View 1 (tube, rainbow, N blue to C red):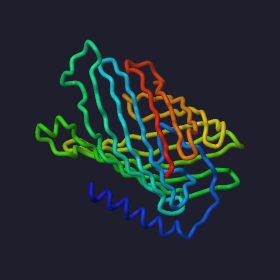
View 2: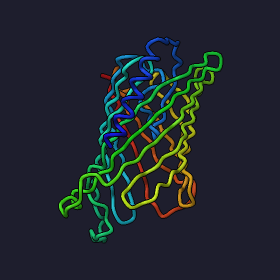
View 3: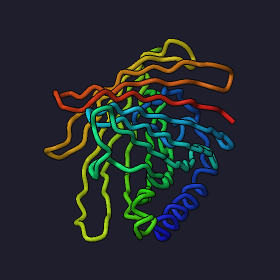
View 4: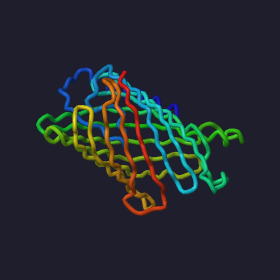
Length: 263
C-alpha cells in the first residue's frame, strides 16, 4: 500500500511540473454520475469539492446502504486528487435470518485517486485525461473482532477518459481501462472496465442523461444508469441515478445519489 501511494505521489509531482508550464483554454463538459471522475476535466488550480454519495441496494434477502465521503482538490492546472472513504451497512429483510451469508457492516476501505487532463482539442471540442486509482479494502468489523487484520487486499484502476461536447447541449464521454485486485493467496485477474455516457444539458448545472457500464468476464452483467443533476444552491448540486441491468437477473433495485458541495 505504501509503495502504491508513494508511486502515485511521484507521478503527481512529475505531472505538476509539466502542467505548470502549460495553460490551455478549458472546454465545459458534464460529469457522469455512476463512474464519478476524480475531478472535473476543466478543473483549475485551487478548486475543491466535498461529495457525499449514497447507494441503496434492495436485494431479495437484505437491504444495503452505502455512504461514501469524497474530497477533491486540484493542485495545479488540470491535475487533481480525490480521497474517499466508503461505508456499508446491511440489514436482513423480514422473513430472512441474518445468517453467515449476510454481508457484514464495514468501512469498505480507503481510496486515493489522481487525474490529469493532458489534452484539449478546441476544434473538435474534445478533452482527454488519464486517471490512476488505488483502493485499500478493509475487513469487516466482525472479521476484525475474530482476529483478522485491517487490510484484506487492494485494487488498482488505470483509466483513459475522452469527452466531447456537441453543440451547446449534448455531451458524450468514454471512460475505459483495466482494473485488477490483489488479495493474499489469489491470482491477479485484470478486467476491462468501460463506461459510455451521453447527456443533454438543460442549464449550466442541470442535465439528464444515461450511462452504459460494462466489465469484461462471463459473469459480468452490463448496466444502464438513467440519471439527472440539479442545482440546489449556488455551490450545491444534487444528483440521482438508478441501475437497470441490461439482462434479466435476480438482483433487486439499486438507487444512487450524491450531494456535491463546492468549497
